[in-house]
Image 1 (tube, helix red, strand yellow):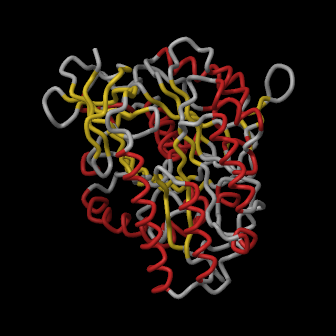
Image 2: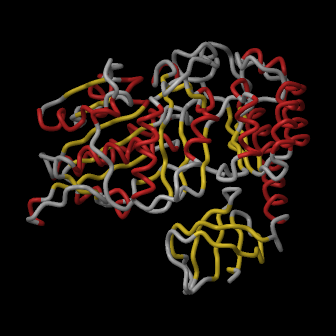
Image 3: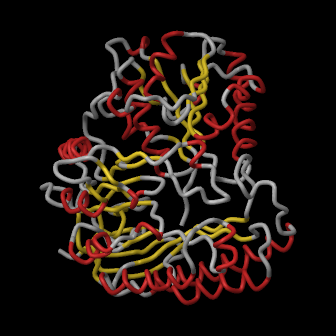
Length: 458
């Protein structure tokens, strides 16, 4: 399982963007997106905002009039990665002096004007809460930095989403976090928890479905902490899911990323009650040691996590669980790591993200001495072997089963379509008559390390 850095797909994101009447006059925008799904969503919205000003997307930085790097501060050495990429843009900027270079996202928020000081080739630095101002910053010209947390709702200042965009879409429903885990920069780069109004989310979801979307993934740094304003009392994530399920044509709903402390009874029940809510849940735990969980300020114990997993599986027995883990957190002992391995073995995951701890400036854990690098490396390798074994077992168990697949693109082989199963597994289906957006039944014929092979059932 991965959260790859990606280039915003121009085939999708150009939909609805201004193309101009004169091909030579069209301005081209290249976006590189780092990190999580929320950044993918933000890149799409920035592309739409710039599209209203005449920009279209390109997949080649060399062709661009503007290059935008939408950064993530969660991954290790995030700043170094940014400056390395900016260094590679120096020759392009030298050859094209009018090229605009922008840095957005969480590294932009964390470092602000320091980015321009270290890399004067950067024209614009904009934080994740201020990117609705990006078009005005570009039009104003000159060097600009905007890392404010504005009073206005940025989503109200973004253009209406138009045109066909494919069968799947992300929808940010909540931003920021109030949990203050000791290792995490999100409260500092994304701010306090803010939930978008329910009516606006329902409107955007209906627009997406009208544009051909059949699956929506609800996004938030702490998505199951959603409490949006709506008719009557505040809406929870469970109520939002139940209302979204009433939209004709919306066949699948997912959400990410969740915190164990916000898995309330109604949300757990929704996994059993709402057919559109897919049998997949990413529920980060980070460690299996109570001592480390306390040091991380997670505010739950391993036993509470076990009991929560039991309740979720009672509501939806076929659910596939995934999670996040950090090894080598300051003070982690051999026994603490053994507790993590025990938790993974007992829960049984379909996949997981696992990382070696790296300090984030400004976080409570940043000043504490870490675990010796060689020890942390060995622990990470052991954990990843166990998780990979569980992933392969989960995929192998699918062979012979009948599943549903939503086609997202053609496969590499003739007559092949590629999509995702209910459990978010990649599936290659032999289907010469298949089309993007079809939701079909198929039988799994084989499992490889990262995907399933299947044949359509007619």
